Image (cartoon, rainbow, N blue to C red; front, side):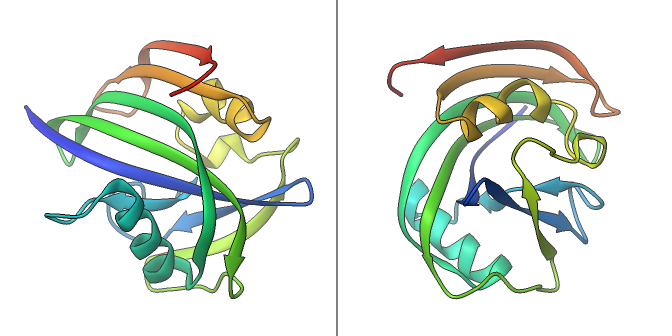
Length: 157
């Protein structure tokens, strides 16, 4: 089984969160935060900044780690174990712009489009956007359906 370390960033402003509609690759057609895999030699934070710049043209100035979640899942038919570090920010440069990979859109935090998001998001994202720190683990089947989840609110990560 392949192991991957990834990051996700959610831009939050005035009761809204920016979600990016993935246009290609793994997760195409789903809304999510921006982020991705670390390049060799990159820290999670360096990767987070690079991914935000590449995907939506913003540079986060400050960000806070809000969750650490592991996923046992399948990516393109391959069994993968992901370590995902999840951050939020309310401080960035530039305005989010569309790229070849994603189309950014703002949503009210209380009205997220869970029908076009990963099925696991409903279990942890409301806590994260509500300012709570979360540790969790998920197991998904080959159709991305949640087989198991364990999500805990923690004081620190």
